[in-house]
Amino acid sequence: MGFFNLHKPSEFKHRYIYYDPKKEAQKEREQKNANQKQEGVDGYTPGIKRGTFREMANQRHQQRRSVMQSNVRLIVIILILLAIMYFLMR
Picture 1 (cartoon, rainbow, N blue to C red):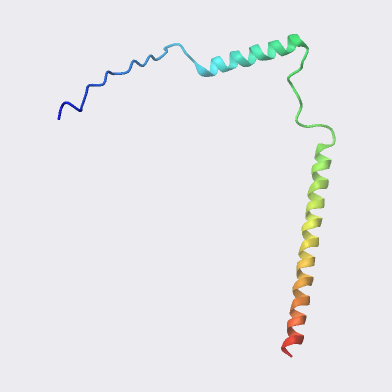
Picture 2: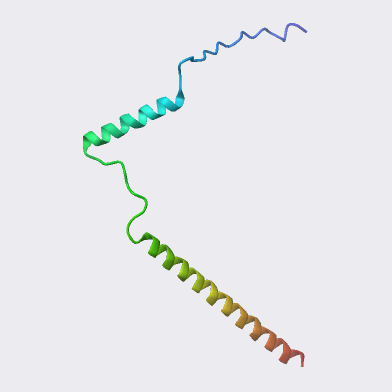
């Protein structure tokens, strides 16, 4: 039975003592930003622009209005179907 259980050598796992992945990522970002600045490309783009809050409020208002209209249509359809059922059952 020992013939099939061959010894596997242990793997060498080198752990870096002075390696910090966060610091490496930060250095890469800084180098990338420095290269972009040298090329004249600004990496910063603001997420909030003038008038975005007003646009979002208008979208919410339009969405509420469309939901209200669809609810009214649904109620009207249900009332029409109930009236048809009433006349057919009579």
